[in-house]
Length: 432
Image 1 (cartoon, rainbow, N blue to C red):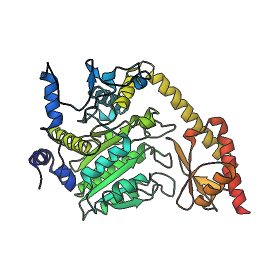
Image 2 (image 1 turned 90 degrees about the horizontal axis):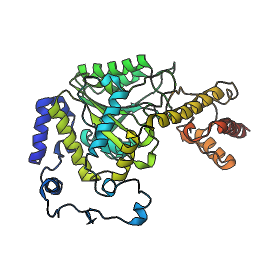
Image 3 (image 1 turned 90 degrees about the vertical axis):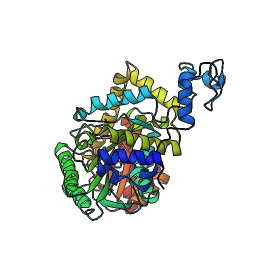
Image 4 (image 1 turned 60 degrees about the vertical axis):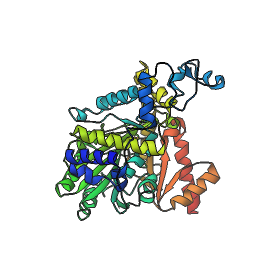
């Protein structure tokens, strides 16, 4: 039985866009954020309880949040109020505003689009999990390429019992396989619904499509919508901004926004990799809809998922990220790190194109992100991974039978040649 608050949200979505209502999972239809309860009463008390506020479950001392000096002494640059209390379930308002401004600045295609205020998540995995909870029922098709982040299987396949549909990431010409995506989408005509995950720069290959490929992806989604398929398109923009060569420089979120009434675009991104703060676990989830009531209802349902799982995300991490975004040195420091990453990617490409290792492997196209992937010619990826790990102390990731992922992001440029020499040496060892 659906609670009355959830019914009201469902009616708002249905009247604003019935296709979005049909995209919701059973849980998505049932979930809501309680307007009455501890949080709402505490919020009301914050504005009116001038004498004593005995509502929220934190401790105070001397009018500020109680804290230990062994912690505060290490964080003395920050006020206790910005560290210790619970952050709002949606995240710090100023951080959400700052991230939205950043998103619009970096994605000009969002100009004039009706975008929700980003909601803070516990990094991208949490954001993807929210998508899964809100939109995926057992047997729903979740579409992503054969070269993917393995956590998709856990998030959508194991947790939500989705029907995972893969298509080859690359064509024979080593461009993005938009036709494969199109066919996978149109195959869901009988189901009438599909969830598509677009992850660029791609993990594990480090590939971002070019402008023409991006247009083909958008066209495939639109064709599916015109065929009567409700499509939830999720842009997993974990490595956004690390574009080193000719490729899309924006998220496809902007091009997908407002594409068709049967298309709901969802952006999942975060500071974790963009701003090199992986352990801070600060991510965001953002929706787009021309109908404000739909956006508000989706936000309320998202807050319901957050309230029912993690309650709210780390306050100190949000404060640290906000402080960085506001700093006048932020852009210069980020550009410095970008150039280091670009230098490593370019060095890898120079090494791979030198002909030095041509007898041992080919490589998949890469132009962005943290990773690249070798396509081994005649040895097992797992056998090679194990051999070079124990023989030479080199750690890599084996994917499938012949693919080996290498994260150049964590290897200094001066050591990259030695790294690839050792991988090559391992192959020669295994050939003996």
